[in-house]
Length: 276
Image (cartoon, rainbow, N blue to C red; front, side, top):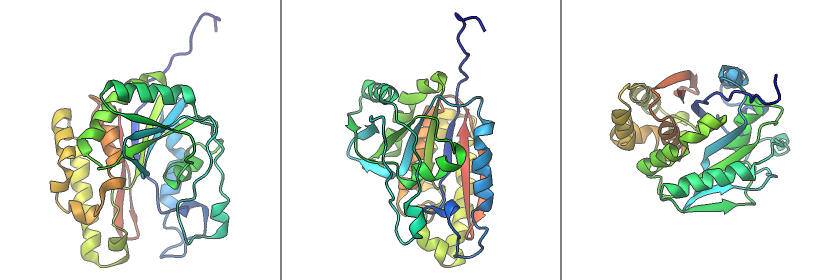
């Protein structure tokens, strides 16, 4: 290649993924079938191969980080945050030594501020399990810089769609924008009766139809009003695991979404979605 030529950067999609239960992929699972998470783990291991190219960086919005204002991690070194309890001791020694990127974090900050948001810089908080657990399967070499971005307290869906819209330009710079949550997140429902479990199917059908709506403005309006959907509050008694999807839809811009994975886990349906 001529030294004056630049490598072409492909526009990245945005992804909304279910991150499983705690460190579920890195331990013997004793609740129900020992193969409960096998299908999802296999899918995660192959997910990077579906991207147009290896991302130059990953901006991750996890359902496990909320702040009064959007907060972006700006340090180059990121510690681990084992924000789960009751799991085997070995799962508290998992490591994901990916670096951060102060440069891209600053870009994220500027883009959000230009859209009217107050943004805080974070230098201490580590990778929570919504970040490191799926990335250990997707990019096991930890050789892609990772920039964690918080949700905003209040979990206003419209604000998070607007935040995603602010970040859309990063996709053309080879940055993968990743939302980590769960399309169904009623832990009590997963442990109890079938009436609760049926809610995951009802809500998943609604969510998939909305994400795949070719009318993007209509899609976003329905996502803003997600709590009016059938079985919405049965699927999400609290919506912190759903709101990362709003950021992905916003960053998806005019791209129509599609469901790229679905599984039945402990009796409930969980799905993943892609825009672009």
